[in-house]
Amino acid sequence: MELQAALVAFRLGTKIKRELTIKPTTATYWTDSTTVLHWLVASGKRYHTFVANRIGEILEGSDPKQWRYVPSKQNPADVCSRGMKTDVRDAYRRWLEGPEFLGKETNEWPVQCNDKSTISAQAEELLPKWAGHINCTKGPVDELIPRISDIRTLRRIIAYANRFIKNCRSRSHKVTLDQLTN
Image (cartoon, rainbow, N blue to C red; front, side, top):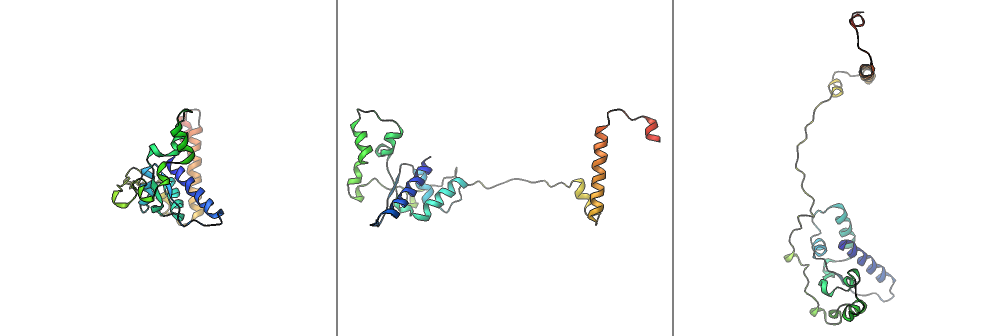
């Protein structure tokens, strides 16, 4: 869900930049998910298709340095998603105005945690390497193919074998000795 929220933020930011007559020089995207920040910085890793597609779309139009971390306690989106009581004025103000640090200089913003030195491998999201063993056994048709060079003959033999199997399965009464000898 956090990844989807980051993708929606990126798409909205892209649309807003496209519609503005005065183009902004930079855009800053915020997330309270360190996992999303890890994925954005470690984009060379192989992730599951769902994660890889969304990270790929985000990175096509943004740089990981544009993504910043907002602590959950200061995240205005958490106010509405976790419920807000009407008597909580700080939460209401944060919802309308955003966190206080946005009014300050960028060096006073919360510390970024999306540089490569702080990123640990997110092994649970990496595609696992497949390790297994496959047994290839030859079926009856595979045994016939090298022996028979003509496709018509092969089809006829397979049809005859299938008809024999069908007849054996459909017999409802027992075969007598007379039927076998005659």
